[in-house]
Length: 157
Image (cartoon, rainbow, N blue to C red; front, side, top):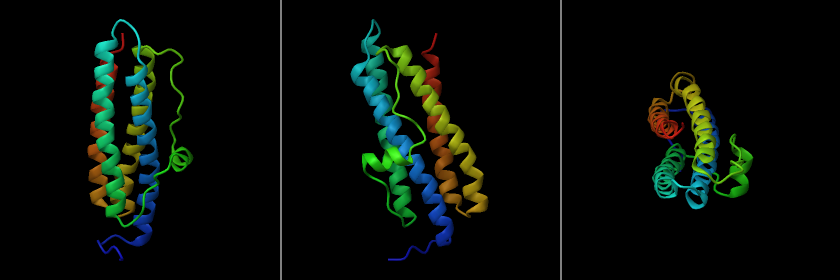
């Protein structure tokens, strides 16, 4: 059934194209955070393991919300590993050592990349593509990533 929500198909298509890239990046970041949770070693294991667990839980909720936003706009989401890898701007690369500091630095860089991407999309979605709802949605995501990045940054020495 056709999606009639006051946004042209061309604009919805472009917004969803960008959201597909975001979804892929969120999936990569979620996977890397889960890797950190599973593989962290060192004297701070217990606290780092718990910290990464909280963060991947938050990212799981973000993943679902981005996918649902794409569907609300009448498009389908990528949902295979191959699709995510092809669309992602982030890489699967992680620290060579399984210590909290290495994982934190890598994950922080990824959060910052997503924040910059989201910040670039906020005005474009609202002004160019006439989609204030998605602009508002990604502003909220940006704030979530800013908080997660702050939490990561606070662990660095």
